[in-house]
Length: 220
Image (cartoon, rainbow, N blue to C red; front, side, top):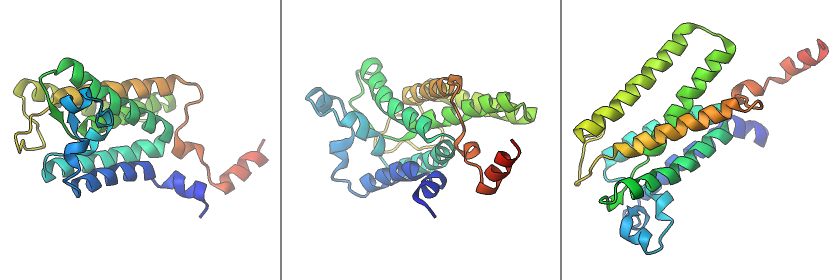
């Protein structure tokens, strides 16, 4: 198998990012130096803005975040790796930025769920655009809309109750629904901009088997 074919079939960037979260958990002595720490960032430790996403407070926190991100990230990467990486990069910076500005009382932050929220909405909105372009079955579009609505409702419930729905608050962990909301908005914007670009293509559709390409060329 050629390198190009291998990289097109394996979501290696998603797997790499998930592996980094697991590696950070396996090196607990490093976590305090990687987490979002407002005082340390103010002192010039800027790397924490990005590295905080790969640190977690508990094993439960880690497993939920990595499982969701790996699944959603792989699906997004299969569809369009460039858009997936762009979305991940922007959300990794915008989420801590929003926390810095809007939650000045928050001293520490950890977790991959904010970027996970970004890739979730990236996938959902991209699917809506795809369904609109191909005019496929209406129930697929309805299903995506329902899931998106439930996700927005989840964020609203977390904001109202100050509790996470899936992850148990441990070690004094305080939920940060703002991170999920910023991630969701980032994902939706990245998906929209990507689909408004005339050159937007879905990775899985763009690469045709060799036999199909030969037949297509003969029929011209």
